[in-house]
Structures are given as structure tokens and as C-alpha cells.
Image (cartoon, rainbow, N blue to C red):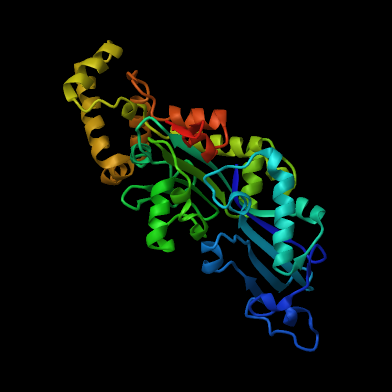
Length: 389
């Protein structure tokens, strides 16, 4: 569902009643006798963010930015940008996930929170608020003793930079975070529990913003073991990219808060990117045998017409890709033409490989089912005040 969202309200959709809550005060944006001097880009911004002490005390607030700028018509306009994590607003954490039926609660809670911050508006203006940035996400519980690292390490070997027009891939935090990055969007997979641990050391080490509100979550909530959480996020960081992706999944409407607060849209966006990643994964790597003898015998069994020479070639390639990954392999062979890699990749994918476990099946199934994670479902049951594991 949705995690982070950025709403941008135009002038006339909101009223600031307590100017001095912002830094600097927004009074200078409106008071004709005391205008702020606009900067080099002909704009001036005033912000109001939650403090670390508020977050530690369980008080969650959105990040507000009021901007005065000159628009395309050479007129001054004042806009309000509201950035927040909707699950943290609603539940105080973003392990629990929202459902479509929560929209009315989210809107009323956000309206009241804005009022507490000195900004008044009508609920309908929130409902129809334009969306300029959105992060769709899915928390995938792992209760089979597997860990997120298993999936992250496998996906780190993929080279999809050209496929998704990416400019960087990061596999960091000791292998607990994998990020496919472009200028206008990011696709991120990470270990949710490890990220929380990183945030306890330093907020800068974590993928999340405003983690302080949930740092002590698992000290107050008991969870049955095994329990790990692999999180997938698609961060559409520019409105143009958001509109482009909506078009790809068949949505041709102006992106508003109400429209995008949708399980169906979130599911389609996440599945779209997972498929792009999966399609970039060579089927050769799906056969997970580390024993060359087993690989060779199984390959010849499933490809009787391939011949011994081709089987040995695929075995060597399998070992090399397993060691260095696709990106490094392509770097090592870049002196050859680009077409050489595509020909080799096509040949690899033309063979049959035994698949004891489909690496992507857990992710596909979770996105297909799209059941909201609720921590209460993973807590020990109580029967007559006796805990039942």
C-alpha cells in the first residue's frame, strides 16, 4: 500500500493560522509590509518538521514546506507541501499496513494533525490534493526461517540498468539493503528489522525517515519467532514519472490523494517493477546447485540435445556469474560488443533448468495476495490468560 506521500496544495486550498510555527515565520510571505526577499531561484521556503523528541514520545507529524515562488505566468503564488508516512500517522509505525477502508480515517487524522500545526483546510481539499511524490510498499513476512539477505543477495546479481534506465545499483549495509536508483525513481528492497536496528545507532544509516517513533516497537509488541520482514518499495519521486507509470498500468487520470490511495494501484505498480527485475534475471542462475557435478548431470538431463561441450560452457558461466554477478561480468567483457552479451543471454535463457525453489515465488505470491501485514497476526495467542505459541 502507500507509505510516504507528498501532497502539494495550491494557494486557496489552505489557510495558515499560526505563522510562527514555521521557520522562518510564514508571516513574511503574506505581510506586504514585511516581504521576505526571494532567493536566486525567485522562491522562499518556510518549514515545520517533527522534532526528534516528539517522535521519541510517539508524536508523529508531517513535514510541511510553504513556498512562495513566481509561477510560469510571472505571478507570485504560495503552495503547501505535505510529506508524511501514512502508516506512521495512523498506527505509529510502518510495519502495520493500510487498507482501502482506512482512507476516511487517514484524511480526518491528517486534517486534525495539520490543525494542531496551525494549518486549516477543508477535508475535501485533502481528498483532491495533487500528489507529486509517492512511495508504494509491501512488507513481506518471512516465517520459514529464511532471511531477507537470501533474497537481496540473489537480486543483487541482476543487471537491469538499461532495462529500467537506471544509473546506479547499491547493495549496502552489509547486504541488508538493495537499491535500484534513477533520477526520478528508486526500487528498494531491504531488511525491515535490520533497518530498525541501524536507526537505533544513527538515523542516517537507515532507509527510513523519522524512525524514532518506532524504535521501541518490539519492546512493547511481542512477536512469535521466526519472524523476518523483507520490504519492497517503489519510490516515484517526480510527478512526471508517477504519471508515466500510471499510464503503463492503465490509469489515465490526474494523480490525486483519493485516486492513489488504492490497493489495486499499489499492487499493479509493485508487480510491474518486480516483473521487470525478474525478467532481467538469467534463468541459468535459478538452478541453485553449488555442486558442479550435480549441475552438469542435471543440465544434461534437462537438455539432452545440448551436448557435453555446451553443458560444460554453461557450467563455467554459472560458476562465474555466481561469483561476480552480471554487472561485473559485463564489465569484464565490455571490450566485446554489446550484442555479444545479448546473444549469450538469449542462449542461456534458451535452455531448461531444474528449479527446486523459484527465487521470486515468495515475492510474487506476496504481491499477488497483497494481504496487509498486521503485527497482531504474529503475536502469541492468549487463552484464559495463558500464552499459546
